[in-house]
Image (cartoon, rainbow, N blue to C red; front, side):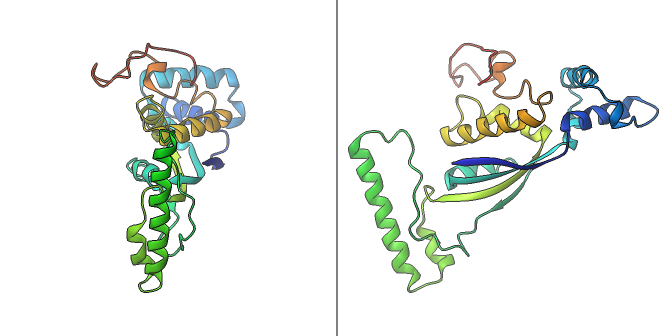
Length: 221
């Protein structure tokens, strides 16, 4: 897996501050007059009050490569976002290198897994000789790697991180979410300072039988 922040709104923290000040002022203030101290003050109040619409003006685009289709099937459930994914209809997936879950640790399980993937590759290759690639792809499993471009605004990213940075999230999408969070913190440190799993900010919101059971923590993941 590789995750890269390839584009973002310039100075998202100041832009969100400008948006908030516009809501409560008679005029739109100049960006040049917004100090770091003002950013800290305003965005602190914004996040505390729940006036999160102002952070929607910040947009972030990621290039994610080498992840499984199992991951992207989860990712696209976050609907307030834009996606452009590698097509299995137009891209020949022969000789793919499958994503292997870390739970496959013993030799027997790994052998079973790899043998099945080889069977899939052979079947896919044989089918391509007889039917279109768009139909041969029906035999491809979730383990086939894919690439995807993802664009979300800061508010949706906050929601995404709350769900997918949680210890209960599936391992692969959690790894991607943690990586994305570290990247956006570099360009919007105030907006995303407290972003991440809900247990970073307070008690676990999950029902007792669904919680991971680990204690509340405030340190960053």
